[in-house]
Image (cartoon, rainbow, N blue to C red; front, top):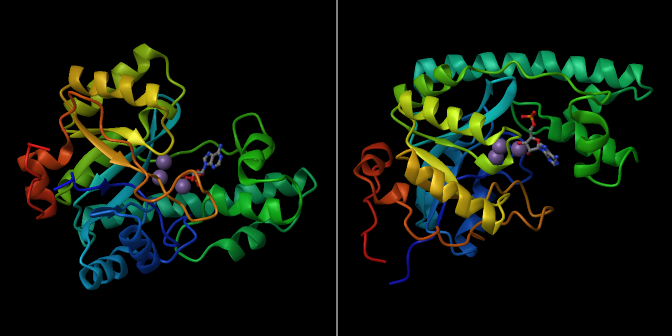
Length: 292
Ligand code: AMP
Ligand code: MN
Ligand code: MN
Ligand code: MN
């Protein structure tokens, strides 16, 4: 039997994805995914629909989330896998993050208006189908208005540090995020670790702090990682005693290079998250046999 395909990071319309939760699950099934985690930003609203569709489709499903964290003056994303969405502390924590998002959205719109782009809050809201307003929704509006040719260009021109629509994040602390995820029965994983603009030393500090707080894994394979990134992260995971995770970070079919299930194998020597006893405890899914 081939090794089951685990895609443990993706988004739906419950955050900044463009497919409804059930549609994400159906697409994953047709792309050869065996076990899928839906991990919307700071929101669990899509999980019930996705879980129901996964039961119909016969796909292994892991309820997840991607929490926004501020650490060392940067935004870091922590994926929680096997969480109980009804957990009150997690619910209260994500509600606080969504409140910040609402405030930030108004502030982004105010800054863009000063820069000569009116109506961005209403514009972004038109692209938003769920409970959280993301910079991605602003980006889609700005592309529609002709301010940039694609979402990436909008980020570069308007939404990152030093640009007119940038508002610094004030997200959860690392300690809070791990507390919420672990309190809700989940495993914490550092998302797309090669994407952060930390020095090598800072990144190692992050991994150390994360491990100290009970973090479980590192996303060694990510849609946004090169082969070299994955090799580097595999090495760090081993050094820090972290398990290896994999996720496409799929946001929708528009973005062809982050596709569900399109994931290279974990590099040699990684300990996959789904081989661990902790995986079964958190997800109720049987750990996959070591031999593969
Ligand atoms: P937010 O959490 O609202 O600040 O938005 C962050 C989201 O924007 C990420 O999850 C990505 O989906 C998207 N994003 C961030 N940076 C870029 C970029 N440079 N190009 C395209 N999308 C980006
Ligand atoms: Mn996103
Ligand atoms: Mn992310
Ligand atoms: Mn993501």
